[in-house]
Length: 407
Image 1 (cartoon, rainbow, N blue to C red):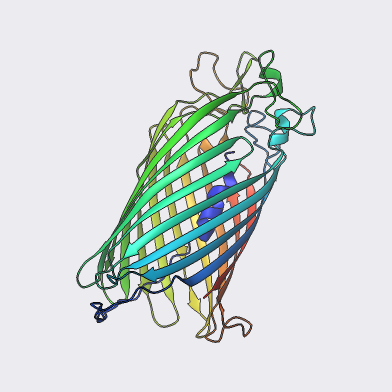
Image 2: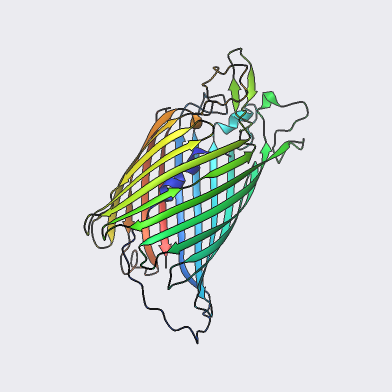
């Protein structure tokens, strides 16, 4: 399911780590090196509660409730060992489980109390293997992932590559990912052909259609230590999607009174370009600034600017207020309820694709005492993050995220 909270949650978990300028460390003689046993490096547990409300549901043609709640949990386990050649092998296993309820999805079939995706559970495990050289800082890795929800399943794979300069002041990162998805084509109840099923796995065994959606993305980033206080990162993330990109249970209404399911092109190119600056003002303040420009071949253009200022209250307590502003020019395929022309080839009333602006404000509290959180030495870090999102379309949301790190 395409849900707003996924994008918002990703923003919250994108807490940028501060990287101080480091000097190369001496490398141990590994000529007689014996392979170490696999050991646990760290465990991360992240839980987030998200709630949104608004009155522009795409399921009912751009009008109606957008009420949605989501409880997301992620468990991340990182293990490592050194090979006989002195290479560090890191294995990261992540398991995510989300449970959500959506009032708008229940309008797919308003006469049923078991409409497709009225509530659902999403499960998404992934595994990453990375081999790195402690002397050079260079690394190479592979990723595999899987995701399953009521109306789709996804298989993913990718590679990641890191290269550092000799003085460790310049770093290049590359990632390439592919996701091969299969979507169950669920239609609004009044627009289903004779004999076409509701998609329910429990009480309706009539056939439904299945369609692919494949996504290919890359990420290029260049990080540079400019001075002892200033660091910069430039990022570009081109991507391409092909397959079923329209959400077929979303309705569109036309000026002649007719009704159809959403229809969008079967391919999409995206090109975000971003820059990030970290300035270490002194021992207590860091200024983190971020800007991103987004464009795609559907005509969407977006500008996003964010400012976060971590304040070190004590040696192990910090508070980081943040603010993000986004301005988006919508796709040419968008029109509000009842305003599509009957001659249009492509059409949507999904306000995620409309012209809009938004504000996002909140703060992150971080606790990392040397003797462990609450005296528990293995509980290394506790972070609590809250944010409030306000969109010009009337959508408002709140999210609370708790992150625990064990080492």
